[in-house]
Length: 267
Image: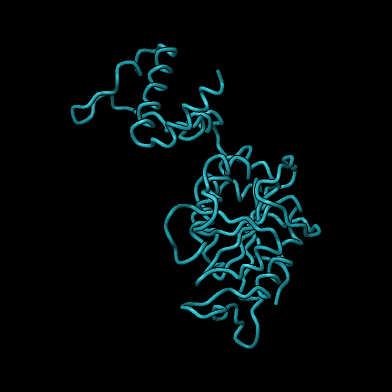
């Protein structure tokens, strides 16, 4: 069994393990932001993370991806990683001794301030604010669940926070891990070519993004709104703001209510 996780970027800096709670505040470090993924399917990575801007940033060393194959820490000749649920029931549960060994190995290769997150449908809903906070840490250790889940004692012992990508159930945490990392990595310094685009996109100010248009000016009988072609930047900004507010009010009443409360508190 190899003690070193499979790295898709620069080599990890070896530091002593100290698990932290979700979203521990930490200064941005000079070394590459590190993502560790404990998974039964390491070949699923980098997947889409190796493409486009995240892939380019990975190659340039702006961030590092280390996969930790859980099967390497399995017990016995067949490298078993799971067992039947205590108390009975369907399915299998990931063993605490196996996951604990994987975590101990992984945490030797990442900064202590990097949080440990378990991707789980019962966790806190992942959103843009969480992505922004994660981007300010040295990195993250992600646990991809399988089967009926992970022995609760692992979560309790390491103080691991659970994070959900939405109110639905996947067969495993790998797709969720890629989505979480994509949303976070794009916020790292130097990953996006135009930093202003981050400020203008959906959720950055608690609102959904306004409609976007480009050439040709007329397509299928539909025209670009005249204000966008006026060259009057003040009017364009007012139009975009009004569009964002209306779209948010109609499509996401929950976000609109939170936006209204924040605006009232800011007065």
